[in-house]
Image 1 (tube, rainbow, N blue to C red):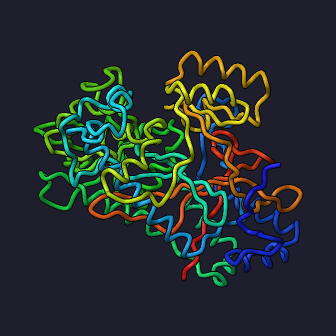
Image 2 (image 1 turned 180 degrees about the vertical axis):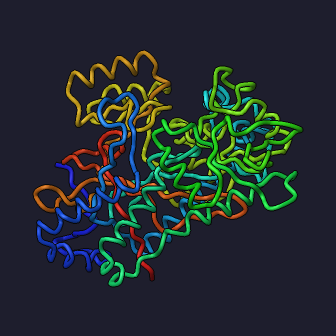
Image 3 (image 1 turned 120 degrees about the vertical axis):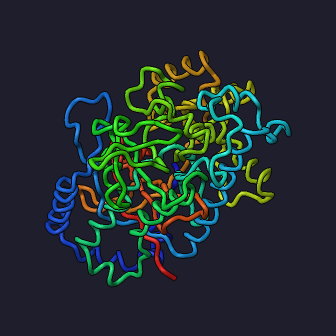
Length: 470
C-alpha cells in the first residue's frame, strides 16, 4: 500500500508549521464550519470568481470549490523553492533566446533538433528576434508536487499564459476576512503585492522605441473565455486597460488603443490569447481575436508582447525532460529542483517500458493540459488502459509517461469533518528586469477521496497557501 506524506501530521505528531491550526480546527464545531464554508462560497459568487469549462453542459459560471484549511510552508522551505523556481525560470528563458537564435544547445547535442524545430509551438515568425531584456516568458508558472519533508519535484512548466493567480489572491482575501484571528496568531507573509510586481515587470520590458512611462494593457479573448474573470481582475488591480483585439489597431509602426479621447499608443501587451490568434496576417487568417499587423510592430521594436510568441516551445512536456540539462548548459549550475522521472514514448526503449507497465504509470499527451488527454494507470480500468495503449501505439511521440507519484496530502474540510487530500502547488515567477515571486502560490487540491488529479477542470479545488515569516 502506498504511503503519502501528510504535511500536517508526522509520526503521530503535528508538524511545527501547522501547530496553531490544530487548535483552530479542534475548536471549530461542525455547524460553524458549515456556516463559514457557505459564507466563503457566497463571497466567491458575489465577487464573481467563476470557472467555465468548455464543452460542459450545466452552469457556465460554476465556482471552483474553495477549501478553508490552509496549506503552510516554513520560511526555510519556501527559500529553497524560491531559489529553485528562479533558477528554472532563468534557464527556460535562456533556452528560448538560444533556440530562436543560434541553437547552441541543439548543436551541442544536448536536446534533439526535432523536439525544438518540429515542435508545433515553435514559431518561425520570431526566429532571429531577441525580445526586450532577452525575456520570452515573463510569467512562469512552475507546477510542483511534494512527496516528503524535503522532496519536491517539478511536474511541469507553464511559460505561455499560466492562469490561476486570481485564486491565489482571492483565497487570501477571503481567509483574512473570515478568520482574522488566524492572521493575528500566525506571522504569514503577504501576497497582495503581486499586481504591483506584475505591473513593474511588464513596464520593465517596454520596447526601446518607448520614450516615456510605458502604457500597459491586458489583451483578452473576451468574456466567453474561462479565465476572463482573472483578466479583468488583474487589469483592475494593476490599473491598466483590459482590451480585446478590436480595441487595438496598427498604424505608423506602432500599436494604438481606441479611447474616448482618441488613439493612445500601447507599449506593452500582456496577452491572454494563444499565439495562433494574435495576428491574422501572420498566424491564423480566420482569427477575430487578434490585431492585424501586430507581429510586424513587435518585430520592429514598436511593442512588447508578454509572454513572447513562441514561448510555448519551452513548456512542451517532451522538452520538459531536458530542463535540468538547460540549467547545467546555460547557468553552469546543478538543478535545485528535480524533474519527475519521465519516459519519452518516442524513444523505442522508453516506449517498450511504458507499454509493459502502463497500468502503473501516468501517461500524458505532450501538448495536453487541464488534466485532459491523460491516463492515471492505477486509477483506470483494464479497458481504459487498453484503449490508451492503442492511442500510444498509433502516435508514440505524442506521449510521455511518469511514475504515479505519492503526492503529499494536506487536511481538507469534508462532509465527515477533516480528511487528508492530495495537493500540488503553482507559484508564479515574474521575469523582467528582475526575477521576483511573492511568497505563496496556488495550491490545488483533489477533493475526491483518493484522487490524484487536482486540475480545476477535473473537479479539483483550491486552498490558501501560507508562507510563515522567519
